[in-house]
Image (cartoon, rainbow, N blue to C red):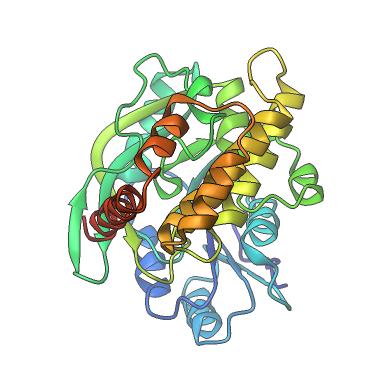
Amino acid sequence: MNPSSSNFIQHPLVSVLMVTYNQEETIAQAIESVLSQEGNFSLEIVIGEDASTDQTRQICINYQQRHPGIIKLLFQQENQGVLKNFIDTIRLCKGEYIGICAGDDYWIDSQKIEKQLYFLQQHPDFGVVSTDGYRLIVKNNKLVKGLSPSHPEPGGDVFPLTWKGGVYATPSTLFFKSDLLKFVDFEEFLRRNFFVEDVPLQAILSKHTKFGYIPDLCVVYRVNHSSLTFTNVGHPAYLTYHEGLVAIRRYLHELYPEEVSFSEIWAHDYMVYRHFLVAVYHFHYKEARRQLSLIKEITPKEKRALQLTSTHIGFWAFCIAKRIKLLKYKTS
């Protein structure tokens, strides 16, 4: 850990959080994209380097040596994983506002921070603002316009959209008032061993403030095989990811029982259906049918899946359709 230096700005207006692990091919571009930001504000970049085994750490050191008053480095001595590294890094951020740029993403608008600052200063009842951007499909070197939220909420009340699972806004587009972190119990995130930090963070922030949106294309989000694309059923961590979403929803229900619906039957059926999808992905007919038979409160979607896979021919057609859908997601 090397977070301290007399050269650092003591009270920066903006902190940009960046976590990285084994991203020697992308980390320089990420750092450069933040350094290129223009505007009338003081800035610090806080990088959490999670004990990479490649040249990522050395690249970060080189940048810190060239920009000692701006770049603050956190060196993990052992790999901590995304959640712990993110929490350790955000705790070092001193800015009144915090932006996020992942070590494999980058910003393409030098006015990104300036635009987001202006939005929050002009809309005091909003505490978070995101932008639009591109997905970069690395395999095809293809830029695809459009990041979440695909349909931003004009009034800014996005809590009903966040607690159901997944993130409302792509993290590298986010910019928010750091004072809102007083509502977030990061120790509880760690105690419950959440698989990701962005889902519960956005849900809790959205409970206490409005989320704004700027339609400008400011960010490039990389999609490749080394990314955490565990939302895809073919990813080895797919089931672990969804178990984490269940744990997060259980926690949010404990925090906000009147607004977040949850039951253990729902949790059971949710994971059974994920196991069914994994069996479908691997073309395991008997296991897929067995999993669906375990559902306690069948929904119309699951009833339809039962009907479509009731015969071997129907099952194979269902499997192929799912594979095609997954392939389109990877390449578009």
